[in-house]
Image (cartoon, rainbow, N blue to C red; front, side, top):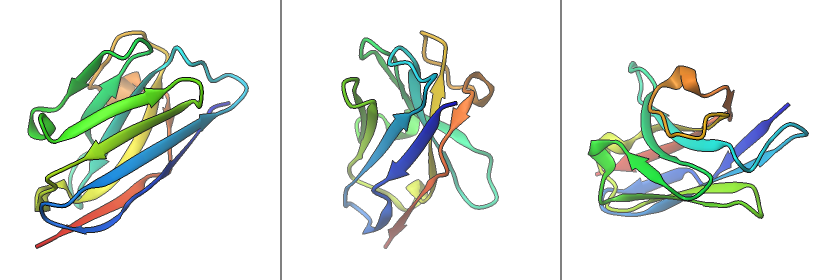
Length: 124
């Protein structure tokens, strides 16, 4: 079993910043897992935001490049998403996910473990 717990969501004005954290635990969790962040806006499908593999390689959705930074602390089994210059369209529930693949994928079905989600709301 793998448990993922997100924290750090909240309400912020456009142009502001937030940092999300995702703590991973569980008997079968491996620090070699690829980690990802997805988000789901009301009425929309869950979409890939960013991913990071064990060695620190990263991949971002075009809409967040240059504004968001994903990172991980393998010793703490924690992944972070630093979100800067937030826009109204960044509003949604942000989910942390873990994949047993070594390569980063933007496909939801490549991730077998999911957190409960953290709400991020950006206001004007």
